[in-house]
Each structure stands twice: as C-alpha cells, then as structure tokens.
Image (tube, rainbow, N blue to C red; front, side, top):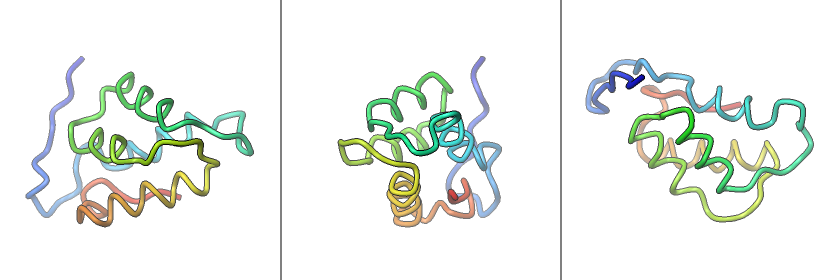
Length: 92
C-alpha cells in the first residue's frame, strides 16, 4: 500500500511524523544494547515503505554499526541539517 506523501515545504507536521522513531524502536526491539548496521537501517526503511525524504535521511547515514544512542544522534543530526525536525520529528 502506497502512502500519501506531504511536501516538505509545508510548515506542518507530516503524516509520516514519528516514522523514524518507530523504525528505530523496531530495530532495537529485544536488542537494546546491541548494534545495528547502516544497511539494516536502510533495508528496514525500504520494508516500511518510508517516503523519499525519510529514505534520504537513512541513506545519508555513514556506513558502520550503531548502538541505539549513536544511531539516534546521527539521524537527528541529518534531520536537523535538513530542517525537517518539525515536519518528521526527532528521535530519542
């Protein structure tokens, strides 16, 4: 099922607000202290059919393995750099 995408130029929260938080929660479910590879993150985004803006965020993630705190830090940095914090939300 295809999702309706919201333009990033609107100054409102997107229908996809919080999707990256859900993705991170899913990746670390049952594995809070483990590491996840950047490829795992991108693959999960594709499986979840994230919109192109959110996939861009995931694809800008540097290659490597990430514990949860570091992954959240990296993704928030990318989201903030794009000015998408209000539109898509930041992570915790």
